[in-house]
Image (cartoon, rainbow, N blue to C red; front, side):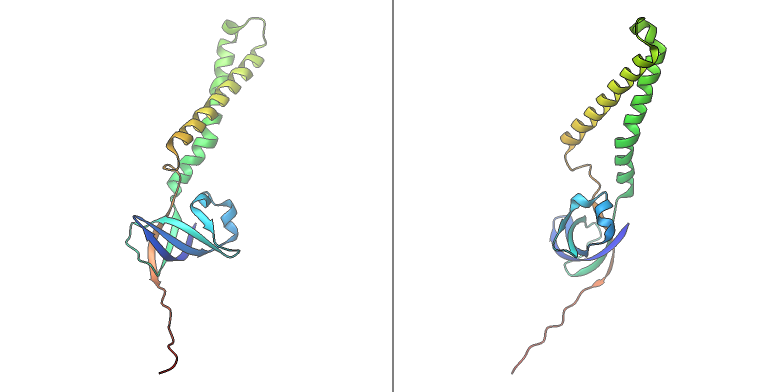
Length: 154
């Protein structure tokens, strides 16, 4: 999703953009990169690889590839682990326990692999910190915001 705002501060490769808060803010996957200024505005930290300067009106967007990877890791990987666990349980249920029902063994192994995957993702996320988080990126400069100063007197 593309948004617009005005750069108010630069810090290294990042720029801080004052932007209007939209209804999509609550659903945005990069909302952790934003800070609420008031009811209508947010401060967004975005990667500034195009050399925009303070006062520039810019368009910024989130890295959709990173968002898709994060979604796959959170939803697809645990689902695959669960299915693999169920299949392993069905195939090897006789070797694991002859007294237990094959479906019960499959469900138990599926849930064990599901839990193991969520724990692995939790520790991976904790270890990597915010470095793998999808961060907004400035994609183009729209213009420069100028303010007119009126000097009274003289």
